[in-house]
Image 1 (tube, helix red, strand yellow):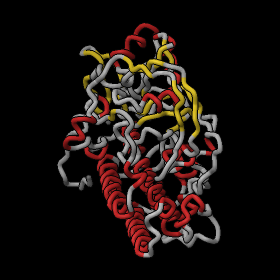
Image 2: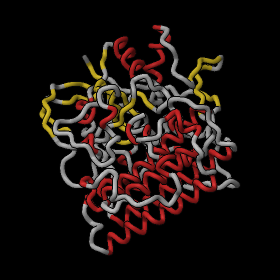
Image 3: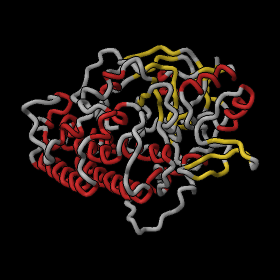
Image 4: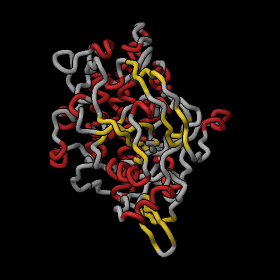
Length: 429
């Protein structure tokens, strides 16, 4: 998984009736997507807006905790490379928020803050660092740790959130809560928690656990914005003229360290798919070449089917193909006489209003590498350990929180991963 996803890797109560997990969502093309250069409002959110967003995200976290407990009462997950123990995931969310926004006395310095040391206070939870510090706790060891039980984990989450909100309010009262640096860590922990919630959804898919759709999929925009932002199932391509495009973050607001340092890049003209490759385009390649089907898809007597959270149902051929890895995407491109876009091409094309994205993460041809002038941020393990052996994905999937959805965001995974909600689009040769 990429970045925060890997290193940590509407509330629904136990008795609340929810729609079936087989209705609507990512696999039938009905999930909300994006058109054109969409940017996350969380990156420039005020202290007051951040406080509200942190509480809304926590509602989703608690809803997912309840849904997981309903589907898997013992919360026992077999050790797998793409998984974390659920109790570890949720405790890590609390630990990360506490480390940066509660325990860090230099939090107001933002990207100039230290990463550790004497400027960090003790945790509210005994031995928290030994349990949840993803930079120190090896992935395979997380199943054997003496983790708090579910009630203890939820108590830790609640205590940390309240302390974090109190510190945010204190900074605002003291006149320190308006600058990008002062708000940096709250913007970071918000997106961190959102990323782990997305991981909870694709882990549930991998385990065949049924989750309420309201907790899984991003809500569409409302009102007039929805009418303009709703994708319309575009086919065909978009022509992008030759130009010099500025890649990388510039200006105010939050940015991850791997996005920083805007730099001009020359681009030749190219034609790119207006939307991600659909099953209708992908499955003929499978039938013609014998390429292995991705997980959760089969050809039954009734036709193509997809398994969603443990339930088989008809596959919508016009929906984006998903659970593909970078090697699948490259093989299709070779068969079709196309190629994967570079991340530069993807981001430049995303400035076009006809560019539809946001239903599946999209593999690119670009290795995950630093931009010129890279400087590591205080969360030192977000990008730097993963250079060059991961592949960049762009966009978002339907399980991605709107706080994270941004045309500039660089996700990254090893090319072999199929468990994430990833597909691709192609470019002409």
